[in-house]
Structure formats: C-alpha cells, structure tokens
Image (tube, rainbow, N blue to C red; front, side):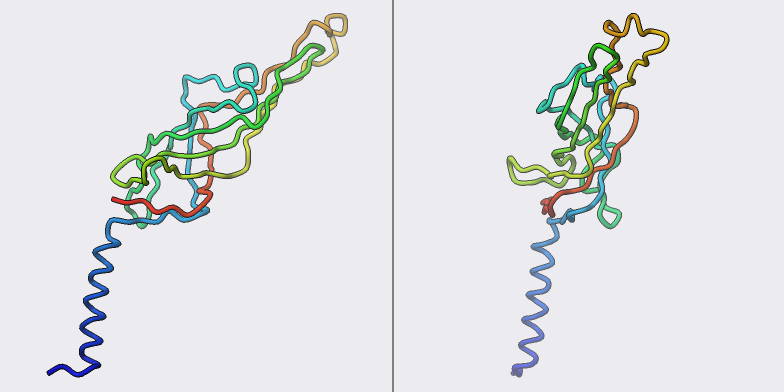
Length: 169
C-alpha cells in the first residue's frame, strides 16, 4: 500500500512527464529578440517609387534560433511599410523615405495558427537623397532636382519581435 507522500511523488512525476510531452511541440519567441532582414536585391526602394502606406516585401536574412534549434528558417517572408515619403523636387530639394518593419511569416517546421504572423518593431529606417547645391548652378536652380531618398538593398537591417509568440511544431 502506498502512503500519501509516495502517491503525491508518483502523481507529480506523471504530471511532469505529461506536461513535457504536451509542450515538446511548442516554442516561444520572446518579445525583444532581434531578427535580421533584407529587402530583395532587385527592388528599388526609393521615395520616387513608393508612397506613404505602401507595403514592401522583406526576407529573413539570418534564421531565428532558440537554444541552437532553428525556429524560423532563413528566407521567411515579411512586410515593411512606408511610414513617410517625400519625392525630390525642384530647386535641388532632396527626397526622403522612412520605413518600418511590420511582420514576418514563419518558415520551417514551426507554425502559427492560421492568419497569425510574428509582429515586428524597431527604429524606423530613414534615408535622404542628396540636395543639389546652388553653386555653380544658380541660374539652373529652378530646374535642378535633388536625389531621391533610397534604401540600400544590399544591406541587412535589424528589427525586434514586438510581442512574445508561441509557435507549434
């Protein structure tokens, strides 16, 4: 016959084993974890091409791993959005574009429930074009335009996970 203490220990061990099995297929991506993203190299991301509110596709440049296990594979797709944009103008006015990262779709063995995404946050990217100077073009100044604000697409950028998310295997 088992006493109460022994029963408690046995039941606790059974519950722990059951809990470990149930949670084995879940992984948590913590809020604040950094992710590395890139824009497609064939895109021209500039104030001349995009306007405020436009979506821009991005891809995960480095896999997301937790404890050495890859949770989201490199190449996962996501979205950035144009937060502000000003086209270049006459009199040498330079253009400007400001972009924020929005979300990322999981890729690999771990998934989110249908329709959910990994929300992203971070400091916005802001790029300004070159302003045309007055000298020696002061006579032509009304006709000269500054450069567009252009995002280098050959560079990787960092964003962070906006809120903790649980993925399932």
